[in-house]
Length: 107
Length: 121
Image 1 (cartoon, helix red, strand yellow):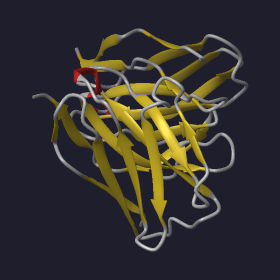
Image 2: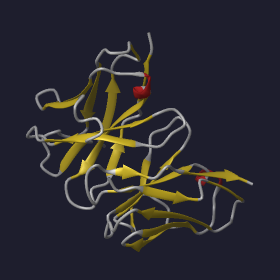
Image 3: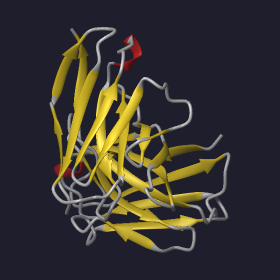
Image 4: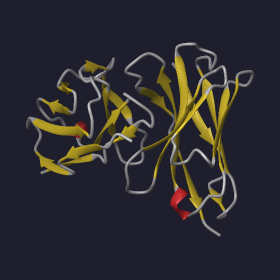
């Protein structure tokens, strides 16, 4: 199985901050990396697919980059509604695997 | 707008079979452009992919669960289902159904709201 490791596991930031979350795969996954946002008690929602493609309706302050084994999710200017847990997921090969999540909290 | 809704018992006894259904509305389960999947999340933990099914009935399972999992599809009712046998407390989780795009990179969207299944006697 491909292991997905996110860092940090938790992060405190303020509204307006620029935030970067990292996801590392245990082997190359090309660009087959997706990012999800999950709020407490809610289902995950896709933000970015294929490393850098923004899902329809997702604000442009979210962006993704990377290739191979190292990927990043960047939020350019944090908004109050962005405080949530973010998870990466590889869709390169089955079993599809997710990172353990990064909890973004208000400082 | 496509919507998915999970349903099934919220409490299952150890060693029994967990059975859940996912009703799809606002779209067809027979779409050749999508898979349909189950993902679970134990309380306070990360997401785990369980398996996918295509409208034709082709299935793909997580090897860690393969011996206990069956996913089936009923296109006439626009519903797909999950069965997980011989459950233990480790199977306690929120279970989500979701659509997965057939073409790469194959992300999951949308998701159902999720249903909590507790394994306990």
